[in-house]
Structure formats: C-alpha cells, structure tokens
Image (tube, rainbow, N blue to C red; front, side, top):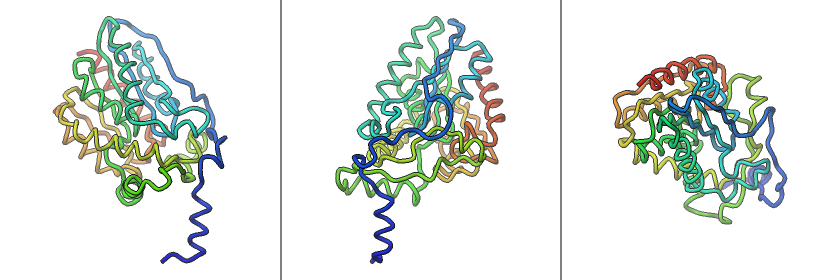
Length: 284
C-alpha cells in the first residue's frame, strides 16, 4: 500500500485539464507548418512530426528535400496548437485523415510520387501511408519510430489507463522535457510541458494498427534511430526493419542521440543519411 506521503506526491503530479487550460508550448523557434516548392517532375516529400511536437522537428527532412530541388510539406498535426488542451480529444483517425489528404494533394503533381517521412508518432503515420497507398509512395523514412514503446515506462502505464478509463482519462502528467541528449537542442525544443493521457493512448493504439501493416510496406525504407532512445528502445529499429515487406531497407543507428534523433547530437549525420536516401529514391 502507498504511504500518504507517496499519494500526496502523486497527486501533485496529476492534474485535470481544466486547472491548466492555458498551457502552451515551451522552447524556442517557429511551430508553423513548413512548405517548400520544388520540381513538379520529381517526387515530393511529406513529413510528420512527433506527438506533442511541431514541424520544427522535421526541418532536417525539409532541408534535405530543398537541397535536391524537391517539394516538401511538413504539416502541423491536428490538435497541436498553442494550447495543449486542443490535443485532448484528437484521435488516430484524425491524424490519418489529414495525412491522406496531403498525400493525395502531392500525388496530383506531375511525378505522382511522394516520399513519406516521420518522427515517432509521425513515423507511424508515414508507415501507415506506405502500407495503404503503395502506388503513391516512392520511399519511407522513419526516425525514432513508435511502433513499440518501452514496455515498463510507457506501454504498460498507457495500457492500464486505456483499460481502466478512469475519469475518461481526462488528465495529464507533467513532462520532464523531451528525450534529447544535446543540452542546447533540448532547451530549444518546442513541446508542451504536459502530456494529455487520452491522446497519448492514441499513440499506443496507432502502434498496434501499424504493427499489423508492416508486411504491406514494399517501398525503399530508411530507418534512423537513436542508440540512447529510452522511449522506443534501439532494438526496435531492427525489429521494425525485419518485419517490412521490402528487402530494400537501410538501418542507421545514431550513437549519441535519444528519441528526438532528428535534432539531437547526431543531427548532421541524420541529414547526410536522408540526403543519400532521397537522392537514390529520386533517381529511380
């Protein structure tokens, strides 16, 4: 049984949204969607940020596309506004509907092909698109994919919340910051100081959906993962690659990076890996 002191400590760390309804983003930079124009005859790039993140996380992908003259879009996902309360009721289906609309829009370009990319939750969205729209997707880039979450720290608590549905899961937990090992990048990273449990459960749901679709992914794929990632253990990068339906898979492990590998200590090497992958896919 918990002591009264432990219960008090827990109570101080669990809040209702009504008590903190004005909580916004913390960090530095522009959270806006990114749009870059490019050659209509070559594949476009569509990238998705992570849960409780912003398009800034995928600037490395947009910059790689720009260097090659490719069009790129990095949207701000549904619910990810300047108020964390707006994320409360967003579901996996809402993120997918928005992603499919953008894929269709970019697919109407002359080339008709799109490279999809994503970080964490965004990697789930991108993988889902590659699985259900193979004729439109020319390549897949996943960074810190969330197909499996660390069981003890993340998956198990979310499963318990999902099963019990206490107070309709309308509460959040304070965050200690994003998992970025570079201290300067960590301080600048744009995210919320709070995690809404109800929508975090949607990430768990999404992982279950995508696990059942991996064999349907047949396009060239680049898997990038931080070796120090405590949210999605590094072993999952190889597990993910092994289950894909394509034999054209490259796995790159970044030795000094955590979960938000796109902005962490190895971000320059991440950029080079994406450059090489996009150049190869664009030549096909």
